[in-house]
Amino acid sequence: MIVSVIDFKTKEINLINLIIPFVALLVGLLLYEFTDLNEEILGAPFISLQQALIGSVTGGAFIFLIRFIGSRLVKREVMGEGDIYIAVLIGFALGYKLFFYSMIFAGIFGLAAFLFVPYIRKDKEIPFAPFLSMGLFVVYMLEKVFRILNLL
Image 1 (cartoon, rainbow, N blue to C red):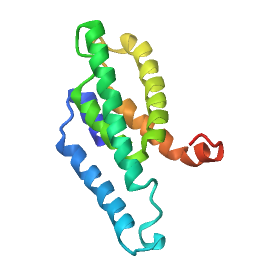
Image 2 (cartoon, one colour):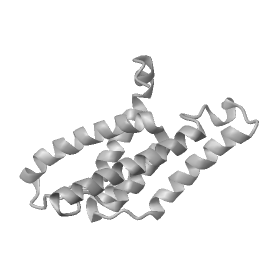
Image 3 (cartoon, rainbow, N blue to C red):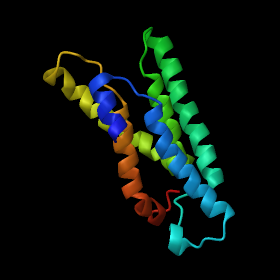
């Protein structure tokens, strides 16, 4: 969330701000995967280490492709490199299935902002990191609903 605020104000994402959450997620998944600590001490993990690794590669590749293809089509940068790093982290946190749901929500929030921002400020560039974070938050909160509806 802090990275989103920084991106919104400066339109830059410092990779160092993403390392701490990534390491924390990695340590938690490694402890759960390779130790005898039970779920009462660590809590049940959201996803397995394998799902996290697949999700991080999928997330990074997905946003990279959107950035690459979009930049070629409109002949200017459509998405920053920091958005790829955030997508890797989101994919690592959620896994590849929930990652795509978070992208749907991020796209909806981003589209709504895109429609209203020209009326609010003159600079029409909108950083995408806040919407990525909002998509992550919504999907994280609705994870049980996705499981109940058998969408995973």
